[in-house]
Length: 269
Image (cartoon, rainbow, N blue to C red):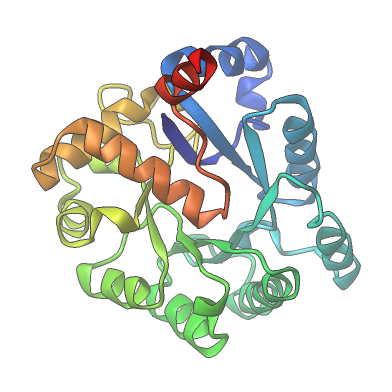
């Protein structure tokens, strides 16, 4: 089975065919999906998706680009939903310096605040970091984020920085960029990192893999990422699928679901 550890199925680009697309995932071998909050409203939509679909889990958080107008009262609300049974992480949170706003000081404030929330509710974190490699790592070290654990979403930095996060116990999120011809750095990281520290993600509807680059992404394209990882690491695709399934469940502290073959065996006995 395949675990999509980072999706945004609440995004408006899925409004016309969301139900049909989600219904098709099981037949494609997609066993679990974590839908990730990027704002208060998307977190609310995520909670709804969790209730409607047994295989969808959720993360609650505010993306750095969306933190400009949030308040402490909003943090109180976010923390209040963290006791939901299928709420498995705080995220996505972090720093994004690609855009000029919100200003870095504000982004850092709410990043630290949400890291503290994760500590309070004993959940792992999903960390977004873009053009802010040193600042993100410095904050996470200062806040002892390894105590919470989590994943560096859409990892895009060097092998050296990957090593820092691996030493802290974090997983690295690998998505469609791994299939891009010019993505030398992430391919080096995939070759370097142990397979048991990598997790699959789509970030859908964004970052579709080749040959769908530039089009709407979905969990249906995850086998292409599995193929890319297998080729880079010189292993069978079955090994990548099995290990990343186990990794996703360990990351979010979920029980390992029985395989179809195991369920059939149990039903005969």
